[in-house]
Image 1 (cartoon, each protein chain N blue to C red):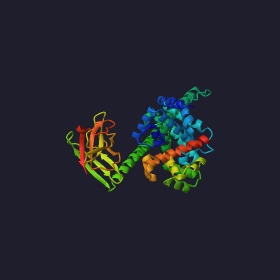
Image 2 (image 1 turned 180 degrees about the vertical axis):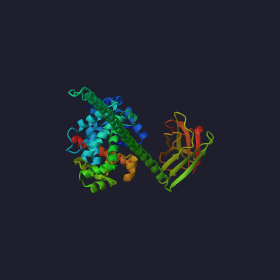
Image 3 (image 1 turned 60 degrees about the horizontal axis):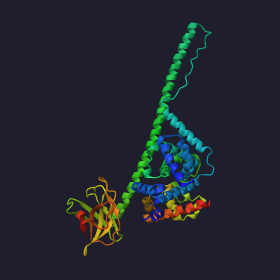
Image 4 (image 1 turned 90 degrees about the horizontal axis):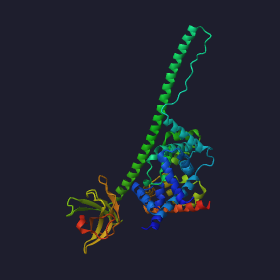
Length: 279
Length: 182
C-alpha cells in the first residue's frame, strides 16, 4: 500500500479519535514519523474536528468559564502543595486590666485555656477536613481509572468476541498442522472458511520466533506443489493468545508454516518448514 | 498558522505538561477548550453539567499529564478520550439524572435518549451536519462522540470494517469542506 492509498483508507480519521487497537495506534504513529504527508493529513483531520466540535457548544455558555476552570485547578494545585493549612491565630483577650489583678489573671488564664481548647479542636477539624478532601479526590481519580480500565477490557472483549463469532461459523474447517523435522514438537491450527476465504491461525504451540524472524503461512496446492503466501504472523507474544487473522485464501489443499526473515519472503524457505497439514 | 507551528506547539504542550508547568493549562484551554466543551455538551446535553465535566477533564489532564505517551496517539486524541470518558461516565451516574431533574427538564425524554442505542440526533442539531447522510452521521456519532473502536462500530452498524473506514473518511472530508466554506 503506498502513502496515498494509506491516507485514503480512512485509518487516519480513526487514529485521531483513538478508535484503533493499541498496536494499530503505534503503527500509525510510526507512519506519521516517517511520512510528512501523513502527518499533514492527520493535522488537517484534527483541525477539522476541533472546529466541528467547537460548533457543538451551546450559544449561551457561561461567561468566564475558562477563568473559573483555571482558577479552580490552580487553587487545587496550591492546596496540594501546602501540606498544612495555615490557621489564623486568635488573639487572647488581655485587655481587661481594670479588674483586680488576681481576678484578671484568673480570667486571663481561663480565656487562654479556652482559646487553646478551641484552637486545638479547630486545628483538628481542619486537618481532618483537608484529609477527607484529599481522600475524596483520590477516590474520584481511582473511580475514573477503573472506568478507563473497564472500557479497555470492553474493547478487548469485543475484539475476541468478533473472532469467536467468526470461527463459530459451521463452514469453518479446522486443519491441524503438525511439527516437521526442524521442530517436531511444534503444532499449529488453521481455521479456514473456504466460502468466505477467511483464515485464522492459532500459533500458540510454535516456539517464539527469534529476533528479526517471523512465521509465514503458506497455502499449498499439491500437484504440482505450489505455495502461495497467506500472510505473516506479526505480533507473536509469548504467553498471549497468539491467535491472528491472516490473508484470505481462495484455494488450498494444504497449509504450511515456515520461519522467514521479518517481513516475509516471496517463496518459502523449505529448510525452515516448521509445521504442515493437509485438508 | 503553518503545520509545523502546530507540531511544535503540540510538542511544547507535552513538555510543559510533563514538567507540570501551570501555564500549560491556559495553553491547552486555548487550543482544545472550546472543542472539548462541545463534545461534552453533545454527550451530557446540559450546560451546567457540561461545565462541571469540563472542569473534571482539566483536573484529569493535569493529574495524568505525565502518563501521556505520544507513541500511542496525538495529544488531542488523549485529551479527547479523557473528556469523552468523563462525560459518558457522568451520564451513567445517579447524580446526572438528579441534576437534570432539578433543572426541570423532561427527564423521561432524556432517559429515553440515553438508553437509545444509536443517538443519531446527538449531532443532528448543527446546520452543517444536515449535509451528512444518515449512515455517515451514525458513524461520526459512534466514533467521535461515543468513543467506539472501529471494530465495535462495524459490529454496531452491522457493516464491514472497510465500509466503516471509508464512511468515516468521506464524512470528515465533507465536514472539512463545509468548515472551509464557513
